[in-house]
Image (cartoon, rainbow, N blue to C red; front, top):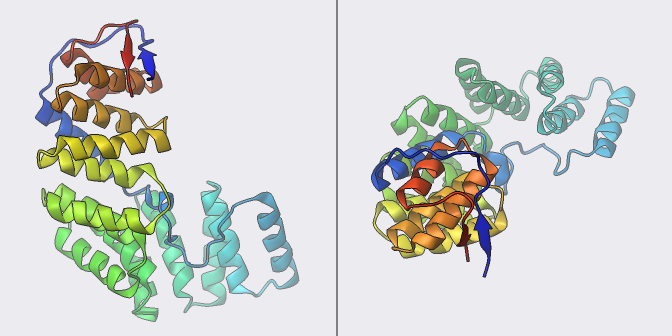
Length: 295
């Protein structure tokens, strides 16, 4: 049995209904999904290396020095730089790869991902469209373009792209996860549950699909299944405030206020300003400094 004491300076006492809390968490998850692709197996960038270590970066730089006209080397180094958070350097490498080979679909898709992450959606769409004009069977471009469409509220186009990506690459967990987020945002929760379940079957243990499926379980009234998923999520990623908050909602729905308060307290220990956790903790009568059972 694990207990947790809340260690924050103050708490908000305003009430918020369970339903409003669930809507807030689903909205947060759907918005976060645009940057959560790398959490799942099956990289969006086919040419990206699996690790972004300095030895990989150094070896690629050495390749470029020896073969300065090799577009693939620039594309691969750009992928490593992007995964390291060095977006400007990555962009320069993708630009160079495209300059050397204007028909390099992967480089356009990789550059599009950088634009998408910077919320430059029109540039991202242009690059995804270019990649697909070069290679109409390039699944990562459909997946990436679908994310842009989803973020723009273009649900019909997003669904078509995610479904196309799945048809081309049925083993891609990301595509199922993203389509699940789309279904979830449209309140089609059973379809969302099915896609999240498939994503979980295709990927290593990651918290995001468990949290996503749990929120859809909560939306259809299956709090027991939601709690089970969230038990998994918080053990996989103990620092995930949304997982702990969602778990609080699940146990609150099950009538276990002690575990609910403990889950909200864990979320607040991670971030004491996280509003859904603050209001949930207040709603179940949580008290600062008191210990609560979490498992």
